[in-house]
Image (cartoon, rainbow, N blue to C red; front, side, top):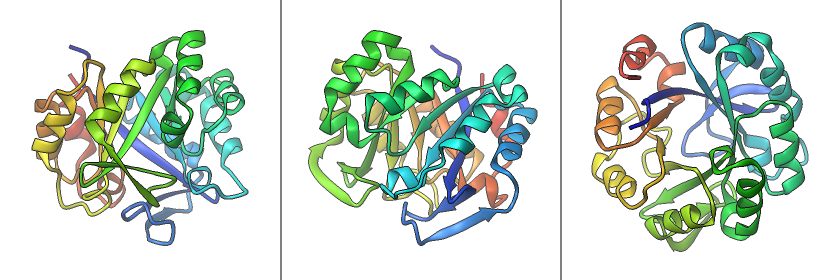
Length: 246
């Protein structure tokens, strides 16, 4: 089994590191004035071996994006030498994916594009290997949501997971929207059921609010967990979580 990873989230909006409640762009529950590059460096200095970076403006299909910030993080010496980076948020074209891979991003996270353009997943996986491709499945009441969570499809999450695996994804990111950003805990049974539906690694995000949640996610068979709001709001202890990364 792969090493279990505890991965801090760096969600970018208007060039700042933020955390949203339930993925709603107006529901900002945390915003830092600190440079996101320094925030990334800080997490790596604390022992993070992978960073989870989401371009929220890209996810919401805004005219602006946070590419320059992502580039600065990826090219930061400390980050480049010590940690891997996975990036998502509005990546809907081959050209965008290639640009990110070329600046040092280890893994591209495809969300909406994985459902609307599965051939894109196949192409990147074929040219760069499945390990460079992660498909994000954002799930609301068992169904996959797309376009920045604004539209819930009729597609069952487990069926979507199997299809992503078939098209070449090397890993999956499972987010339970129903608990995301609320910091009230996870639903272990749903996670275990999802993880058992595929044979590729699954990273879990959404609702993580305690070290016990992290333990349950690991016990459910996931290979990692992304933590955002609970870390930034001081509700969960980073060092205790890190002790589970074995």
